Image 1: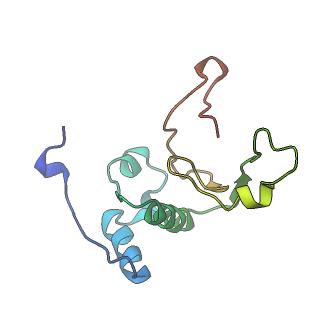
Image 2: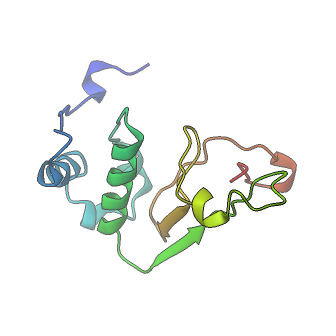
Length: 129
């Protein structure tokens, strides 16, 4: 349960404004550049969205604030029972069905991530993507 004093700042960001998105990040994560290595600082705040497109934009903007080289990972997409290659991987890579991540995952060392489900605990952290 979240108490009222834990909700420090609430802002609504128009869906067309990149400047307001940067302002929101700066408001929620004050002095991020000084505190990004502190786990308690990073886990004490969150930006929530009901739109997957905005979640993706927020994540990309947040990753940009972290120092270091960005690593890029690609999904492996293929269609089951498609002997005629009606669904080539290039086409499948453009799709983002609900509940699935985008084809490209960008990460930086020190940037927090969350594993939403672990479908194979016996073999370590694995969520099927």
